[in-house]
Image 1 (spheres, rainbow, N blue to C red):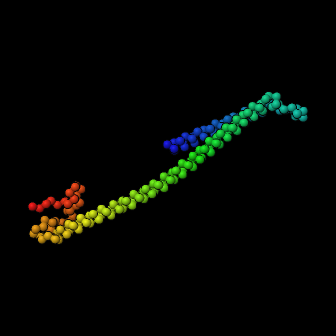
Image 2 (cartoon, helix red, strand yellow; image 1 turned 30 degrees about the horizontal axis):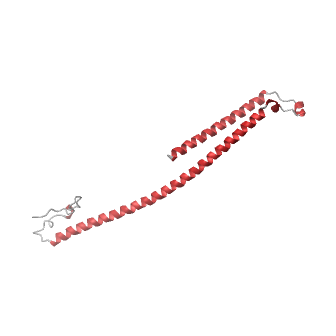
Image 3 (cartoon, rainbow, N blue to C red; image 1 turned 120 degrees about the horizontal axis):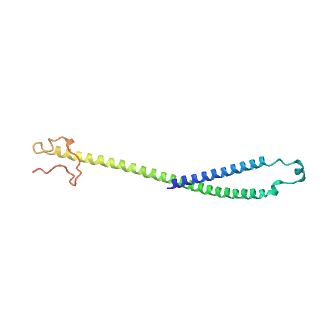
Length: 167
């Protein structure tokens, strides 16, 4: 979910920057066209101190547009700062999750090793018990003495001893 929000915010910010660049390019293009379409001021107007921009009222509009762009820039910078802090927080949390998972995974590995050792010990004890019964009984009375040891397996039922009672 956080990844989705992250991607969405990045797309939104890139779109805002793209639109802002397009507006800046359009303004530059319009100002270039206006400069070309207006006749060049005569030297005597410059000497008299007359300024064409003051007559049109355009500097006020440009000033307002610049202030609005500056305010938007501050808002965008604030959003970027919030986003970067949220990203850093998410990175720290992801590192903690990775660290905790590594501990958990290591503990699972230890438990698996313990279970393997316990299972091997159970098989060993079972085989030792079968060998003891095989050696303890006389050949003529023992059903175990004539059976190979690999036929004895640990039962998975409630009755852990796999042999049936001999009558």
